[in-house]
Length: 179
Image 1 (cartoon, rainbow, N blue to C red):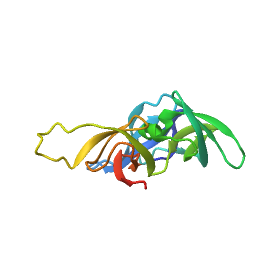
Image 2 (tube, rainbow, N blue to C red):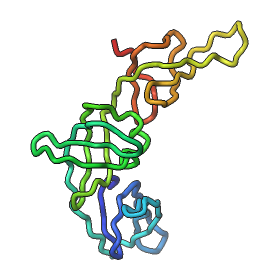
Image 3 (cartoon, rainbow, N blue to C red):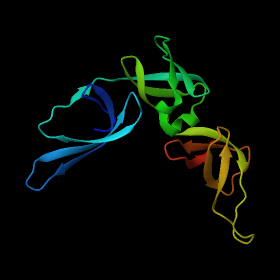
Image 4 (cartoon, helix red, strand yellow):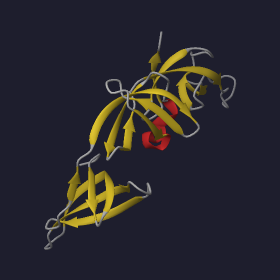
């Protein structure tokens, strides 16, 4: 299942995608897209139904983001006050939306963060709105806006600079006004 961590030939992989396939007269197999935890590289492997794959136990914990600096997020666990330095790429592209005080979730293995997630709705402020390149008589329904975190998203044309809006960090989509 996607999100699980497995061990194969002494290497640790996180499952990105898994598909069960049946080959004509041959046996069934699993086609898996994996991310090598040590290198971050994606690999595609096939496993026969008779092959043993060991699932590795990972711990899911919630943390609060203290701050981000360069390519690192500094987080704290609220019950034990355990602090971790986590590379922003653990959160994927959603790392750009990390904010001070935000609750985040990490998958940990042996004290090391394998992946992270943030809330599905994040408040951001519009810093800039790009003018439409269409003719002056055409009113665009959406236009590009630069947010306070440096991410450019598409927003409805009625929004103005300085407005606070909600964004879905998974696909950079506009959800609505924050106020």
